Amino acid sequence: MAEWLDDHGLVTLPGGAIVRGRALGAAASPADFALVLTDGTMPAWPHRRIRWPDFWIPLDRADALDALHEAHKRARDGERVEVACRGGRGRTGTALAALAILDGVPAAEAVGWIRTHYHPKAVETPWQRRWLRSVS
Image (cartoon, rainbow, N blue to C red; front, side, top):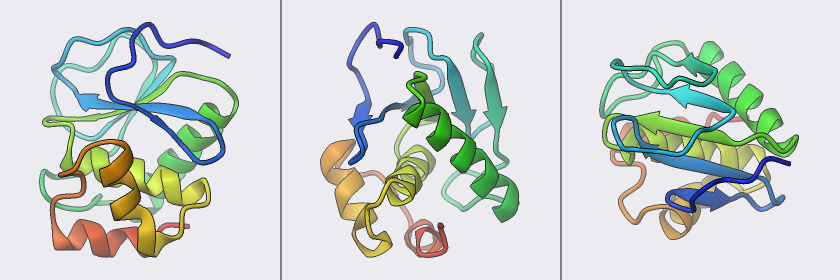
């Protein structure tokens, strides 16, 4: 299991896997894999981009869920997995809440859970909250 070099933005999912959320432009120690939810400079480590407009939901639901399942599996397998968007709260918080759902948090509790464990303003819009109900 790879260890993180710092603890900024780390979230421990209920099953024990640790994932990191951050703003894409923020300085960060390396990850093994990143889900990138914005345009811009991509990280130097392996990554997968989800087309996800700011303040909105993923443009391709199937692709987003596939990417989230991949990230969840990698994190459970001990890889350092991160999720990043421009600001590190709305899209990142929504994706982290989705990972929490995949890890056993009931969808109805995911927003509150991620706001407690990551950032109090994670998941910024009503449609992001609604989208989380479809995560499985």
